[in-house]
Length: 163
Image (cartoon, rainbow, N blue to C red):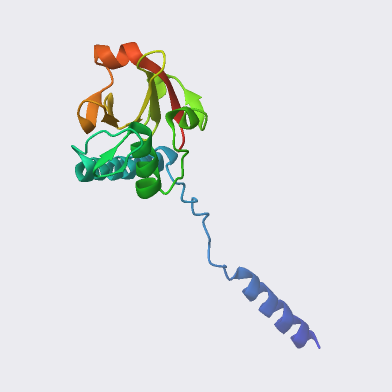
């Protein structure tokens, strides 16, 4: 009987001395939000430059929606739908009502930029980067312009974030 007790105690002591595999907590992989955002911005910018290459020089035509001629809001609507998969309204006035209004200093790739050319004429383009935007201009058709030019600065109305 004593032998059994000693044997049980011995087994108990020896089993208590074995060590379990030590597990250390692995740090959770945390995605860097800013790098994800930058990656998305880069993809959007690339898509917008592809759109520019495909449509560059297409003449301006009020109400147009083809390579024979396109107006500014039609080009923005077509670009958002075909390159970014986002439907937008057709006219500049309608497009100016969607999204989040932002300050010009907050512009990111893909934001919409609106201009008041005169009392009756509105214009819209898509911000690229480095104060450049993509649009269909009456004088040159689909093109990239400098936002900080005197003409566009004087006509600047507002900016909207859709993405």
